Structures are given as structure tokens and as C-alpha cells.
Length: 552
Image 1 (cartoon, helix red, strand yellow):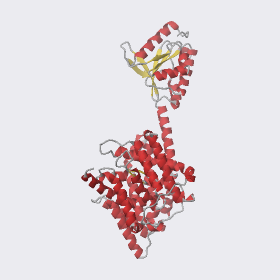
Image 2 (cartoon, one colour):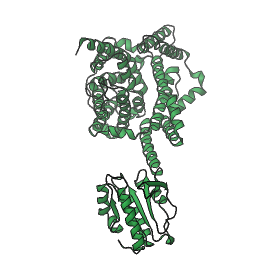
Image 3 (cartoon, one colour):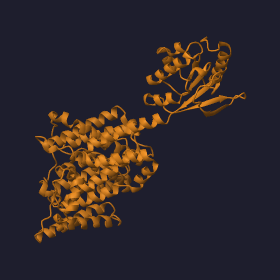
Image 4 (cartoon, one colour):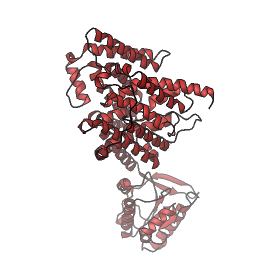
């Protein structure tokens, strides 16, 4: 490793490490746990994942979305809430590693953009709403973040002016300092300014909550703690939800931040790395972690050269805890809330929301339902419902997009495409080509588009061309079997042109090939249209000579 690269890693690691101290505390605050759990999650998550992720510059930390899932788990109901948190991190790690081993990265492409846009937007709103109490000093007993925000609007006299002042000043400082050469370090400076203001107000007799009010900040690193296996069953759903959120965010990082050689990181290896980060975080008293886009982008923007920058960042955090624990305890809570609110606002992308809205009513509805659910119900349930909605929407869209078109062979060898007839005409060979996905949900749509068969249709032949179909769903086979029976009942027949050996064997195995009889199934090959023309010519001869008597 060259000296210049070491210097870049040292600088970028120092920038990320300094910025991660208040950010880690804020994540713990957002999750409703000891802020130190967020700090330790940042520290050990980065170290545990540094050399195992497929994306070189992926910083594994506690993200806002994951913190919200943790906040909805109700850890306070457990006998040992702190240990339940560490157990949750370890379980999340195991789920992520299992996902990586099983190569689940390919499944993420089935989550539509509409669902992700609604989810990410709602996460930003949830972070913002969840920090209003710390930002304003107003406490509400309402059941969820939306109701607590409404309670604040209805009772503005409950706001603590001095707490709000610290929050507003810190917010303004963050916005202004990020536009200076300080950039991301402006976050740290703004937190310091807000905390100094809180200290001054305290001297004047105005109490502003500090991190030390929530927990004592030891000047030592935590020792390992084993998970409580008795909590495994009750925490499993939350662990799966956390893993899903972390894996989706990690996939976004691998797509948006390429490796130094320009290649995209392996998402399955990213899963394993994030899982290792969670194991390390959980064993050393940290909260669940995942790939952080903001931290990864900061690392790249500050000139990181290799994975060593992540280790440097963790080292800076460790030194801060060991040498400046008392200073960390003086950080003002409204200052941390201001940091989270600024991050939340940056998470909401109006352009992305508008893009989905313009795509169509189905996509807009998906986005809207996911957004509302994420705001109103615990995040782990909203995540699972969002995935379920995505699957249902995909199935519905694919089934309704299936169309059946007629192909009319011409003497010069070409084929003209036109609408399929509503009723099967007598004395003709009708070649039909289905377009779209042939699966269980599309079977009724497929059947509805086949020409109606009645006594006036005899004799006739329907040739169905299935090019590119490797396997038939049983529901599609049932449709073909029933349609063949209808045709046979009026002295007509069904012929299939299939391009896959596997599909031909399937038709033979289920007995449909035998039902169709001789020349009932034609095998397509590399010359497009050749098998269709043979089936068409043979079917014309069947009509001319067989006259619907069922002869093969």
C-alpha cells in the first residue's frame, strides 16, 4: 500500500470517525435506546464489516430506517431491554449472513421503485416526527408519532422555548456550515455550537436535556455480552424486517458507489459483510446496523483509498470514547434532534415522489399505501406488507398484460399479425400467439381471449404458438385441456407449437400430447416461423380431408 493512499485513508477515516460520534448517539436516541448503543453499533459495525463487504467503501452503521424498526419493537417489555437489543442485533446478523449465503441479492429486484419510494419517504417523515419531542421539549402521551405531532400542533404552549432555541440554532448552523469548506464536519461543529448554547442556558437557570441525562458515558469500551437465546422467537420478525431494510439500503450503496476498479460490488457478499457487522455490534453492546449511504458517500467524498479508512474511522470513535467521554455526555439532546431532522428532510426526495406519481395510478397507489402504513404501524410490519403489496401488484400487472394475437401466414412466407377473432370461424386454421407471462394468475385472462367455440365453428383448427415458453403452469395446462375438449366436441381440434424440449416433455407427462393426437404438438427450432407454417399446412389438409372426423 503506497504512502499517499495511507494518507488519504487517514484523512477520510478521521472525517467519518469524528462525524460518526454525534451521529451514532443520535441513532441510539432515534431508536429509543441508550444513545451509547448507537455509538457502539457504529464503531463495531464498521470494524466487523470493513473487510467482508463486496462494496469497498460501504460503511456499516445504524441507519435511520433501522433505528425506527428498533424503536417499534417495544424492547422495554423485555426483562432485560438492553440485552434484548444486543440479541436483536445478533439475530439480524445471522439473517443477513444466511441471505448472503443463499444469494438472496437477486430477490431485491422484485421490490418495485414505488414501494421503495413510499418507504424511504415515510422513513424520513418518521424520523422528523419522532424528534419533535427532543427538538421542542414537548412531551405527548399519544400512541404514535403522527398523533404526537398532532398533539404538539394543538398544544403549542407546551413547547419549551429554550429547548426549541437550541434546536433551531443547531439546525441553522448545520445548514449554513455544510455550505462552507467544512462540509460534513460542519455537522460536528454545529452540534458543538448547540451544546455550548445549552451549557450557557443552563448557567442562566434554563435546563436543556443532555446525553448524560439519559445515560452515563463511561471512558472505556464495552466488553462482549452473549445474546439471550430465550428472546429469539419473539425477536425473529423484527430481525427479519431489520435484515430486509439493511439489505435494501446496502443494495442501493453497491449500485451507487462503485469499487475503485469501477466494478459494482457483489450484493451477496455485502449481505455477509453487513451480517458480520451486526454480529460484532451485538456482541459488543451495540444496536443493529446496516449499510449507510450517507456515511459511505462521505467516505468517498473525503478521498478514501481503501477499506483501511473504515478502520481509521472506528479508531477515531474509540479514542473519542476513551479520552473524551465526559465531553460526549455534554452533547445537548435538541442539538442531536436537529441533526436527525436535517438528515430526515434530506431523505425525502420530492422529485422521486413526483416521478412515481406520474407513472400511473397503480404505482402511485403502491407508494401511497406503503407511505401511510409506514407512518401508522410499526415499521417491521410496514416493511413486510410493502413486500407483499409488491408481489400482489406484480402478479396483477403481469396477469392483466397478457394478450392473444392472431398470426396470418402469407404465400410469400411472411406472417401478418392482427386481432384474434371473437368466435372461431369454420373451415379455417387460426394461428394464435400469446404475449405476456403465462402463469397461474394469467390463466383466466388467457382463456377469456381465446376464440369462442360453438356448433358453427366446425370444422376448424386453432394453432397456439408458444415460443420461449420453457414450462407450463398447471392452470395453463388445464385451460389447454379444456379448450381442446371444446374443440373436439364440435369436430375441430387444437394444435400446439412449442419451442422447448422441456415443455414438450411436460405436455407428454401430463397426457395433453396424447389428448391432442397425431400432429397435435409441433417442436419449434432455430428457424422462426418454420414450425408454425408446417402446423398451418398440415391443419389445412386435416380440414380438407378429415372434415372434423377426429382423424390424426
